[in-house]
Each structure stands twice: as structure tokens, then as C-alpha cells.
Length: 449
Ligand code: NAP
Image 1 (tube, rainbow, N blue to C red):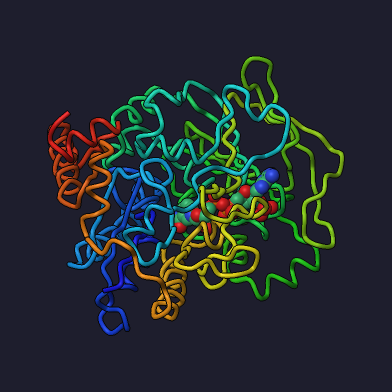
Image 2 (image 1 turned 60 degrees about the vertical axis):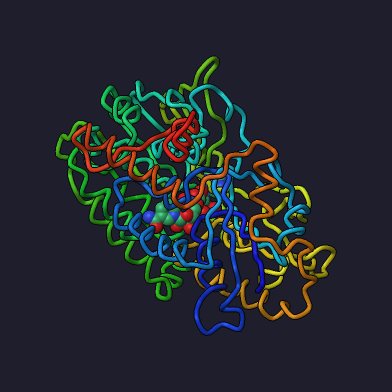
């Protein structure tokens, strides 16, 4: 039996577990423990995908099937690096796959970005999804105008959530405190700001189109910002998504606002120069841009200010280093070759990576399937030569954690959280409502304080 620990129970980690236990692989009889620092599985499927996107969230049903495989075990509430070190995992496992994603946000690197009222979109997303690490009162919506920097799918998610009303969102499992905050929102203007042009935007068409269907917000686009130079026009011939995005944007640019209570302004060709304000954010100073020969945005010296009392920086996630793992600060990833962790260019025995910590924060959920399979293929190729774990006892890690006072959450514990959330929802007249604090999650999972 090959014993493998996977650190992180998001899509990449679970797809790796699936690839390891799939019938027909050489090591179809591998046993796998999937560890997560949170009491709940599914990573960004639970804490990243917007609650009003139930179809994307429903991928958790397929991920559940993997975690219910007889050779796979979920161990929640285990923080590898704090509760147990990576090196200690080697005592119990023949190989470790690190798949803990990209936990923090990229920085803008402009003055004022840490002013009160300036937040990372990743934190805002975690908040509206009830992530246990984000305080319920971390955000308020008592602002008139919000500037969101970046034109990727996360930016689209946050402007959409802010453009909706609490009533629109009550059908989701959004936590009560988020609905209460959004209910008191007096936002009228949302600005989504791209530093390059519409053809370079990262959002996907399905997500973009949804913004035009908001009951509560008119989308406003300046047609002049959609004009393309000859080189970009030529490139578009091979870029179907950018072409479709432009069609959607042109449709909006030709539309008159209908007087809905909120306005969603989509801007291009503006790079953030400074988050303005003394004690709190009062605006975003931007500079006009054009593309240089390499396709990067360069400033043209034309400054303007977008009035905003809240700035959300939605410029991508970033991976963090883990003790005992090599790390490339520049890319925020672990150096690897097809998932084999590399130190000074050479593979580190028994260490693998999958998902965003392997390739960076790009792609959709499904991208992780191929990515994880590549890693598992490498691991299975190496398996005959891997030194075997010193302790081949399936319960060794759980015992060690218990000795350290760590209360691990099993799959049954997670099922108990799900049942408690369904009950909470029923009490509120909703299908399901989220339990948010870590203590409350542990109480639901383990049944005692
Ligand atoms: P992203 O797709 O990489 O978009 C980041 C945006 O930030 C880009 O517009 C980028 O512009 C801009 N940016 C980066 N640095 C900047 C700076 N210093 N100043 C101004 N703008 C800057 O990242 P994301 O939106 O966080 O999404 C992460 C991944 O999750 C993506 O693969 C995304 O598709 C996926 N996701 C998918 C869904 C969905 O399918 N519904 C939902 C959410 C997230 P440049 O292009 O100029 O660098």
C-alpha cells in the first residue's frame, strides 16, 4: 500500500486523491489522507465561488464522491506547518502532495493601499462566503461608491454581489451577517477598473454577461474605450473569448441607462496610481494607459480621480511559502517539474505539488483535474523508488495530533456540519445557511465545545 498525504482539500487536492485511487492505476490501492487546516473541505469551492453561482458550487457533489472513496480519508482542522510539520508527515506517509492553493492577495504596490477602506477582493470574497478567518464585521457597505481594481472573474464576482440586494441573495446560503450588511448598503456606483484594454481583460464571457442582467444596476461603458488598434484587431481573429467579451461590451455601450438604483461603470485603460485619503479612502487616482510593444500597460500622464469610499484590489491571488518547501517569491509558486518539487533544480524525494501552488492562480476549477493527474503520474512513476514511511500505521498521525490537543474533523464531522447548516437554514426559512466561526464549526462537527 502506498500511503500518501495531500495537504489541502480544494479541487486540486481532491482531484489528486481521485487520480491516486482511480481503478486501473498501478497504485489503485493507494491510501490517501486529505488534510485541511479548516474544519470544512472543498477550499475555494466553498469559500471562493460566489454563493449566487450554485451551478459552479455543485461541483462539490463530485468532490464528495472522491472523499467518500474507501481508501480516502478527510482530516479537517489540521494545520500542516503549525500542528504538524511537513517533515513529520514523512514519518507516516510515503509521499506528500501539497495542494494548498494561493492563500493571499497580490499587492498593487501604490501609496495608500493599506488605508482603512482599501481591502483585497480575496478578503471580501472570504467574508461574503463566511470564511472562519474573516470577522463578521470586517466589511460594511455604508459607502456610496466602490472602485474595484482589476478585470478578472473575481472582480466580476465582487461587483455583482455588491450590485445585488440582500433579497436577491437570500436564496443562497450566504451568512446572515453578510445579508444584514448588504441590506443596509447604500452603494449607488460601482467602478470596475482595467489597466489594459477590453481585449486584454481576464473575465470570461458567461460571467461578464451576467452583469448586464442585474435587476438593480445599469452597466455603463464608454464606447471610446472599446476602440482597438489594428494589431489588437488582428489578434482578435484567434481569440474567441476576447471577441465575445467585446460583443457584450459593445452591446452595453450602445444602451442608455434605464435609471436603476445602482450603476456599474466598466472602465479600461486606467492604471491605479494612488489610493487617496487621509484617514479613510476617498478615491482612486488613476492614470490613462496605452499598450507598449510587449502588450504591457504604460502610463500616458493623464491623471483622473474615481470617487470611492471603498477600494477592492482584485488583482489576483498569491501563494505563500511553507516551512520545508522550496518557494519562488517572484511567481509565488513552488518550483517543480510536472508536480515533482525541485530544490536547486533537483527533485525532492517524496514531495509533490498540485493546483495553484504548482502553476499559479489561473484557470477554472476543471483545470485542476489535468494538473493533479500530471502530478500523480509523476508520483506513481517514482513510487517504486520512494523510501517507505517509518510508521505504516494508518492512525499514527491522528494519534499524534490528539496527543497535541488537535481535534481533527473527520468526514462524519463534516457531514454533521452540513446537517447543522441545513437545520439553521430551515430555522431561517432558507435551504441552507452558513455556520461561520471556527468554534461554531467545531461544535457542529464534534458535538462538544
Ligand atoms: P485574474 O484573472 O488573474 O485577473 C487579475 C486582474 O487584475 C487582471 O485584470 C489584471 O490585469 C489585473 N491586475 C494585476 N495586477 C494589477 C495591477 N498592479 N494594477 C492593476 N490591475 C492589475 O485573477 P482573479 O480575477 O483573481 O481570478 C483568479 C482565477 O480564478 C482566474 O483563473 C479566474 O478565472 C478564476 N475564477 C473563476 C471564476 C468563475 O469561473 N466564475 C470566478 C472567480 C475566479 P492584467 O491582465 O493587465 O495583468
